Length: 235
Image 1 (cartoon, helix red, strand yellow):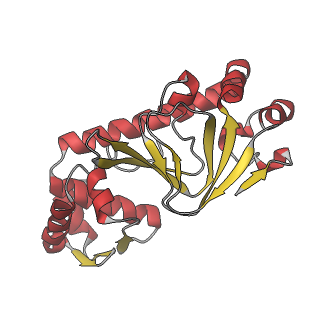
Image 2 (cartoon, rainbow, N blue to C red; image 1 turned 180 degrees about the vertical axis):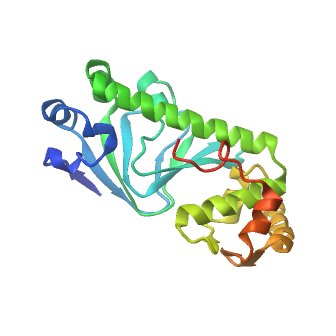
Image 3 (cartoon, rainbow, N blue to C red; image 1 turned 135 degrees about the vertical axis):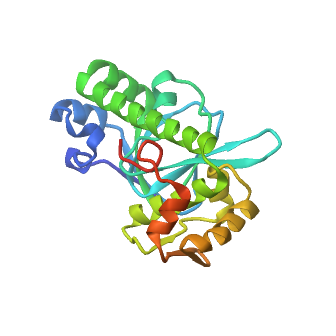
């Protein structure tokens, strides 16, 4: 479903646009649209050149990589109010990943050339884009450290602890999507992910379908060694 932006105030809540002057924001949004999409929608394929800068208003988007043989892995999940791959939009380069929506979500679509021109002309928007790029770069470094410095047990245990913190439920974590995708994000097979969850029952976990009960958070932390320079953080 596409909804035209009718007032500037509809976009003022988005941090990426909040610092702009009203006149420049209105120019940027003159032909922008709000796009409401259902679960499973593919926003774009890897290899496509961006037509829009997508900004997540609500919900999230999964960024997935695919091999020539058809293997698919989850790289990361981007959540509101983030930009979706601004590096490709700013550079005009092809997307390196597919974007797919795991839940009903809403996006603001700004034409790519309009967004690039606005970022070049408006220092406030340029600084906001740089901030978004920096945050995404730091997330990617955290992910690489997680994959290269940790054992399977440490990756799975810290994933559960970070997920429970994000969901605001210290005694449990509900897996947000299928285990195959989560496993691929953590650099392992579904079978290895399931086995590792089962092995952590001795460290205070109890698996009940998609819900992971945390019976002993201290014991789990001792087994997986959370690290603020690797695990979920807004910075």
